[in-house]
Figure 1 (spheres, rainbow, N blue to C red):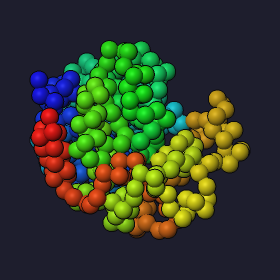
Figure 2 (tube, one colour):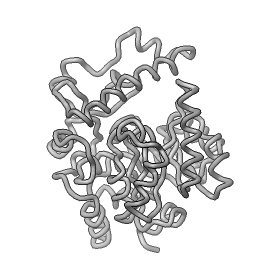
Figure 3 (tube, rainbow, N blue to C red):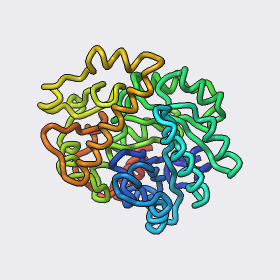
Figure 4 (tube, rainbow, N blue to C red):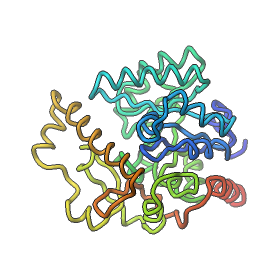
Length: 328
């Protein structure tokens, strides 16, 4: 069996086990479509389509599908901070199903209601996990696969190495995707050899020609090294990986003591996290339209070590696939 023929590729009907991770606000329609068109699968981020690009959700889905006839997926965030938000997410999921999307990546909550909607339509749900207890909850909810977010990931990150996390979550008889640290062909091949059924990449796809993020953001990723990545809780209240800049060093990487208490108390944590995410989400959206300043955060993972230049998506995927073939 080919190195690229995995449970993931067979289930989704894609050529290569590469997921273009959903990113707010970076997952513009052209980027999502480009990953799918190159043989992987791009994941749309609903808030990016609606709040960053000003599209009606259905129109956003159709714009992506106008750019590619290959499969695409959707990210569903199940954070409980706002009932109205969850209602909108449910509406968007139903529209996605109507538009033919059958692959869903769920994050930050109980995915059971997503599985209940998607499974009867013949789709599948993979859930983001960072440790055994979340994998167990996802398995109990009936998901079809796990996306193991390790300590090398950008944005909301985990605490385990790719090797340790795979060992920790591999006992549920579910396919596992590696999320974090895959920025070059060698790390791609290594993940598959470890036993992952595929990889999810975000940081690597920001530094592409198709991504509409500000040029200074893309260049910061291409210029950064692994040691430049630090985790901060000041953005959303949970660890987020960013590029170390003078601004990050100035303000520090920990939320204040009151914020930490509110973020961990059962009665306030969802409310507080919602405030953090709304505030930072607005800032990220504004950056997409007006550019970035020295007081902004550059979200990125340790895969920056493998990013040397801003390139087309197809060039990156073709290089990964060729290198993995020739080193077998």
